[in-house]
Length: 359
Image (tube, rainbow, N blue to C red; front, top):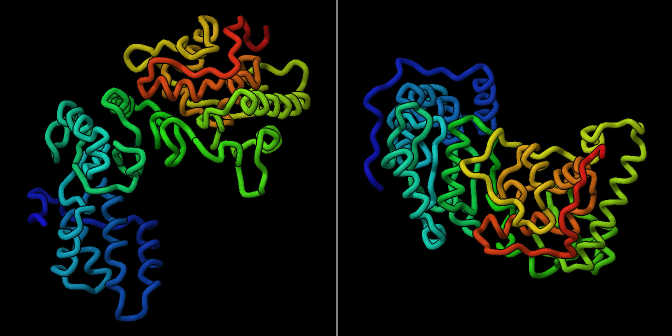
């Protein structure tokens, strides 16, 4: 354990907000009389969060006062645990996992981006936006390399996608947390290889269950690379589901009203992150559909790869071809291309059609 010291420059005082003061009182009350010191980690963590992810000397002393502990005891705790930052950090505090799995999967390349973009570890950029540190295992080994930025994980990174992520944060654009190639949880990179048609614990399996039991909205089956029959069965189920919802709408409903009735609009970018990806590499996307996707703020493979089932329904309905994105497995194709694949996988593709909602 290296020596950790408080920052030279300190604020004059620290006080919890009324909300955090009430939270702290509830936390302290969990412990019997004489054992309030057990809340020290929780209170220090909340003080750090309130102060922009760093602990000042006045904050440490405030926690000591609230817990009736000697100041030196609380200082010992704060300086022992590396999760407490003893000096100011950037608005976006990047913690890079450098443990063996991440190192083997490219953490050094991510570190090179951080050094080039931000500077050395511990340095805060002049605009106050970024700082970074290398930490031990963050618990997402299967999705290495990865970083934690403030309270969120960003996984399956490449130097290119990580650079784009920093650009988006700096510009205030929306970002997608979690896997940057769209896979769910710790699935294999190439998609599920077993139980690909079993979506629950109800005993259903086989192609029939794909049509009758579509997965939850945040777990599209497209990352599983379904075979042609399963993909078509799921697409048919989606078309039927969407058709029932649209039948309840007025005849003059707009394309957006129809899409909103069946799904959720995906996050949009105002402009490409540098050069837009060639979306026509996704089988089923031709010049017409590529233009429509650009109009929706979709310019990159990783955006399509991250679509949930609700977002797929929204886009498919808006573009007036519900079920087709499922049938042609755009998400699986885009995930492969986002990882640097040289070709896309198509299931039952039918080429691009000049279609758009309302036409």
